[in-house]
Length: 483
Image 1 (cartoon, rainbow, N blue to C red):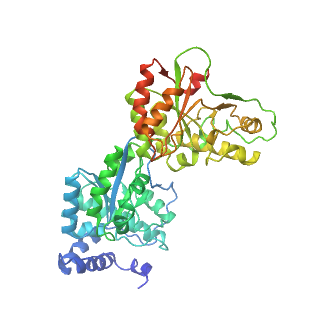
Image 2 (cartoon, rainbow, N blue to C red):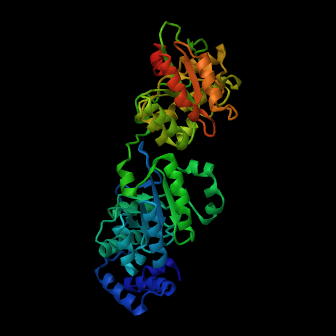
Image 3 (cartoon, rainbow, N blue to C red):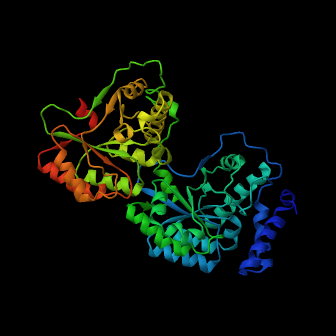
């Protein structure tokens, strides 16, 4: 039968037929009991036929939350049988994990005691629409019914407010955002990462895979009606999150941690770097080291890494009360703006290291300026303020012509370094890195390190800091050293 025709039937017939189908699988209640139950619900349900399209502002679609806090969310879609749901709740409790469950209104009406148990255990319950139908191709009134009636049924059965809705399908129609707003819901929730059964055997066992998924503000999704091994995934996932030092929170708590994210054009300084090929003689300064007498030095970190690595660096710097300068590869910050903002929130300086990390001296003037200006804009939007106007060329390759092309964009300070130990090579162990830094560092030095994964910088960093401090050196951000 055509899905649109279904919604023209009396509502108790529609809901009763959906519920009978679900009961046929679960065998929990008789069809007569459920039909009677839904007849009572239907009497109070509004008539959704030919609901006019909402003309107000649509709800936001949120697949991740922009936050500097060390939080992420685990979410579940759908509702499996009672026994499986209780086993899942037991495992979450054993692991001290908190989650958000997006449940279909029909299943909540069928087994409200299971949904109430989810709430009683400290988790959050939100809407997976009324019946988890594919909303693509539906009329607006049909979509609105799925959203509004689904939330109403859940609120009636659970006595709690429904704030968010999620589609059961990845392709989300624009009308879902309108319908959510029309229904008074705060947002439509998507997902940053979806974990399926296949991940348990392959990627989920791979530490590199997990490190890429664990980010501040991430929303991880597991579909309980498609994934039969969710319980097996939880310990592996929880161990990885604990190793990074992050915390599972419910979607409502994650939303409370969200920071304002303005569009690029509304951020002061977004246009401080511009393409400008006319200034062939732009002045620039190459800064390698402060030659004035003193014991101030700068720690600088280049490139990009996962939350696992960068957060460890931030924790070490915080432990020793040191501020550093981070030269960001901007395409990394583009895919993980929360981590870039976290670096800023910790009080560190952020600067430009191009967009995609090419060797600057190999690029045409046009391509080089594109790299510099795009990086400036991406970093500005990621951290929500203008970065320090310092540029560091990848690999340190620079010449006069290249420096002038860069300076013409507005980046006239080329921030180099005098201490490098090739820490980006995984074969250089922590002792080699420490020894090299100590041998090369002198008053006014700029130390180059990297925030890349799978190298030994994190391991060496505490010893480097302690031994340099013991020699009387103090650490300042690079812009201060350049003054």
